[in-house]
Amino acid sequence: MSTRTEPADPFVHPALFYRDEREYLAGVVPFVREGLAAGEPVAVAVPTENLRLLKREIGAGEAVRFLDMREAGRNPGRIIPKVLRGFADAQPPGTRVRIVGEPIWAGRSATEYPACVQHEALINAAFQGRAVTILCPYDTQRLDPQVVADAHATHPVIIDAGSGRERRSVPYDFEAVHARYNEPLPPAPDVPAHAFVADVLGEVRHLAGEAAARLGLVSPRLDDLALAAAELTTNSVVHGGGSGVLRVWAEDGRVVCEVRDKGHLSDPLAGRRPPSRDQRGGRGLLIVNLVADLVRVHTGPDGTTVRCWFAL
Image (cartoon, rainbow, N blue to C red):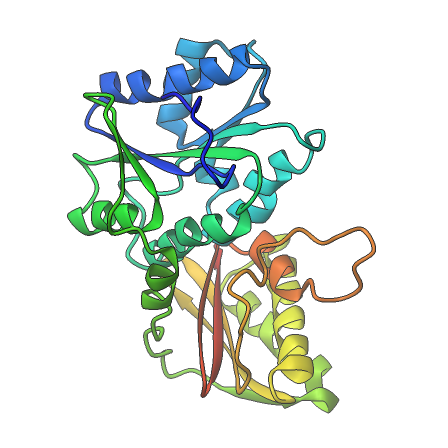
C-alpha cells in the first residue's frame, strides 16, 4: 500500500481485507518495507500466528517493533494508550509513524467484540491530525460478515489485498458505530450487590477482594482486581453522583467486577489517553484498562456501568 498522496488530515487509517496467508503477506509486508525505506518508525501488533508469519517474511532483525496483539491487546481498551500511542508518542515530534494493528481476529468472543469495534472507531478520534498511518488487517474468510461491515464504518479507506485496489469507504461513520455499540450490558447474575458512598469505600473494596478470592482469583490478578475496584468506586463517588453499587461474580473462567453509578461518561476517549507528565488525577479508568483482561462500558443519561474481567 502506498501513502504518497498526503490527505488533508495527516492521519491515515485503512482497513486491509485479506482472504488467505498469501494476501495477508502481500498487503502487510510492502506496507512495512515502504515505511522502513522512508525512515519511518514501524510497529507491528498482530495476533500470534500472523506475527510469526511477518517475522519470518520481514526478518526479526529489522528495525520493527513486533508485538503479540493476543497479549498486548487482550483488552481492546488498552490498545490505544498502551500499544498505539505508546509507540507513536515515543517517536521524535513531527515524525510520521507507521503501525500495523490487528485487534479483531477469528476467536474473539461475542463479549469482547463490542469493545473491539469501539476501539477501532475511537482510533479515528485519538489520532486525528497526527502524522500516523495505522493499517488494520481483517480476515474476510473467517470473520463474521457483520465484523466486515463494521470495518467499513470504522475505516475511511478500504484496501483489497487480493487486487491491491484502494477505495474510499462510503459507510464510514465512526461516531455512529461507537454510539451503536454503547449497548446495555447483559444483566448481572443474582449475586450480592454492595451499595457504597464515600464513608464505606474501604469496606466495599475489601468485600470485592474477598469475593474474588473465594471465586479462585489469586495474586497478582487478585491485586489487579482490587486496584480496579478501588479506582471505579472512587470514580463513582467523585464523578458519578457520590454513590454506586458493586458486584463480583465468576463467568466462563474469569472473575467479573462491576460498578454502577448515576454518572454519565461524556468523553468517549476516557481511559484511553496516556496521562501527561504533570497530570493530577483522572487516571482511574485508564488504570482499569491497563490491568483488566477486558473492560466494557455502557453509559447514558440514567447512569454508567463499568464491567471488567480478570482471568482465573
